Amino acid sequence: MQTHPSAQERIPVHPATTLLRDILDVTGEFEKHVARELTVNATDLNAMEHLIQSGPLSPTDLAKRLDISTAAVTSVIDRLTAVGHVTREPQPNDRRGVLVVPQPKSVAKAMSTLMPMIMGINDVLDDFDETEKATIVDYLQRVLDTYRAQLPGDDN
Image 1 (cartoon, one colour):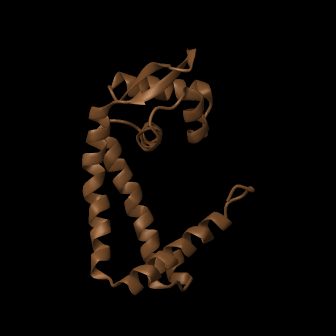
Image 2 (cartoon, helix red, strand yellow):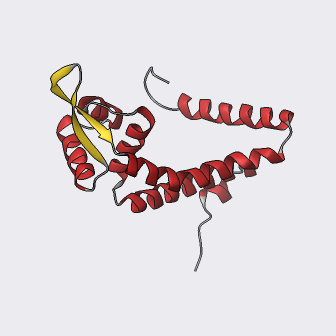
Image 3 (cartoon, rainbow, N blue to C red):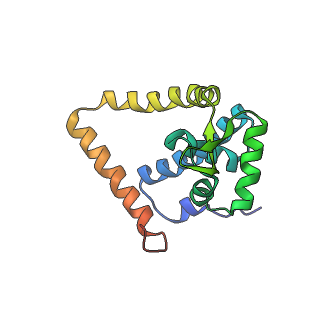
């Protein structure tokens, strides 16, 4: 039986580029792990990430950040409320408005899963001198810029 070479075998790429692909793959696996820990799906986890990073958001703001309809975000909020990750609270400046507020216990659980990974990655940099760290930052910034340049639209 003849096997076909993978794309990586056909296209010569630098080992660092292959490692970036591997990092993206493992990041996806890690996000699934965090979602399982919080008993949420990928969309709900994405919503939680926005709420953890930004604090309380209106349903409309959350829908924009998730790039979903306001009707769909209502379902997300309902699911997150049902498992105790968020509450709906009145918006202080608009008595008809609502804010989606992440619950401290849920934020703590998410952070207890994320922080060992984040700190472990940060600790890796301790093995490099300042010049090497600057080179790593420069490389990653250029990779990020390359990714963004491939996205459609004017906002990259």
